[in-house]
Image (cartoon, rainbow, N blue to C red; front, side, top):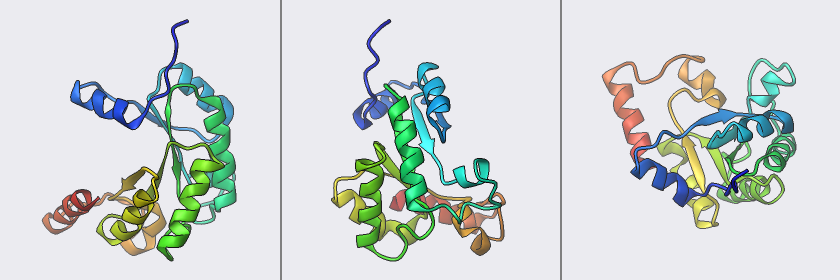
Length: 175
């Protein structure tokens, strides 16, 4: 079997430059992540949606940092090649830059993630900047953001009007 080199951010950029498609799936546990990695999936998100899929909650809001660290660690132990992104749960980053850095650091150090994901565009730019300054890669999540479902009118498509589409574009540019 050929050596399976761990993917890095420069590898992902190179794939984009070459016009390669990047595959990205979700996993919440060791066996699923192992199968995805062996199937050649490039990126795996360990989502806060794990509290819905695994624990039966109706929303992602009950996800806690300890839960996210544990399932991220399980996924990270399973993979050899895939780039692992750990999701930052509700209120793990919103209150302050310090809390955001601390919790992002936990997903990297304890969870073994290669990067973290958080919801919010321009309104979270300060948090993203602080986390990146701390040396932690961040993936932004804009548009349909489940943690803010009550603010955006539920789990429904975003950017359907010219005004909201412009806001999505602005959010993407800011991040």
